[in-house]
Every structure is written in C-alpha cells, then in structure tokens.
Length: 159
Image 1 (cartoon, rainbow, N blue to C red):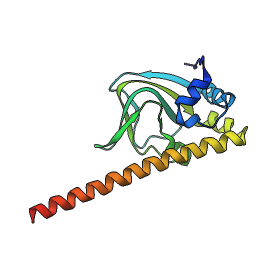
Image 2 (image 1 turned 90 degrees about the vertical axis):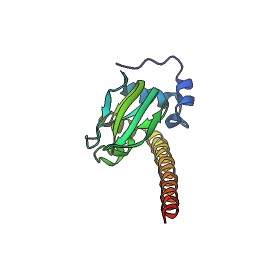
Image 3 (image 1 turned 90 degrees about the horizontal axis):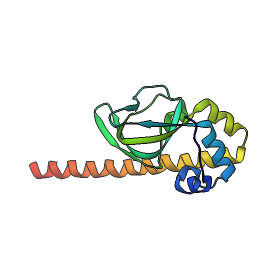
C-alpha cells in the first residue's frame, strides 16, 4: 500500500534515518516505499533470504534471531534489513513480528534509482546507515564482553 503522509517534517524528525534530509528528500524516499502491516508471529524475512529491501519500523516490535539464538529486538522508528541491502549479501538473521507492526518497505531497485538522482541525499542516507551499523556493532561488542566476563566469573566460582 502506498504511503500517505500529512506532515513530512514530523516524519523526518521522528525517524533517525531521515535526520539531515530535506522534506522533499524524505518525501521522495517515502514515495518509493510501501506500507505493510503484520500481526504477531509473522515472519518479515528469514536468515539466508536474498536482501532485496530494507525496512523502517513505524510501530510495533520485531524479534531478531540467528538460528535459535536471540539477537535482540527492533523497536519503532528503527531501520532493519540494511546490512544485506547495502552489501548484497543474504539476510544475516530472521525477523519475526513480536507486537503488531507497521513498516515501510524500501525496495533496493527503486532506492538505488532514487539515490543515483541525488548525490547529497545518497551521502546523507549512507552516513545515517553507517551510524546505525556502528551503533549496533558497539552494542554487540558490549554484550559480548559482558558475556565473556560472566563466563569467566562462573568458571572462577566452580574452580
């Protein structure tokens, strides 16, 4: 379903991916997207799937897992599915709807065409996507260190 936006400035301000863009640029991105609504338990994508789109979660919650291992959750106004979208690699995780979700789906072909027409927008969007990936990498590193400390602590207690 195509997206109708009454106040594009409000959308720009609420969604971190759009920060630094003009209202016209945000409108252009929204125009190439489609709005979908999914109920809890539905799968958005599966680990190993081809990465042909990325998603902006407008409302709801998504569970992220690799195999049977839970990797975390995606909350409203966050971007998801961008890694494979940028690299062309298969999906690295499965996304399952935990709480009813509304998402903007941005298809790769349309998005690439749009960015090719506006270098300024392309630079801003890719900068924001790098920010998202760096934030997630930092959080993963912290989680890994905490897990290692806990494992060492548990080992020390049993010796």
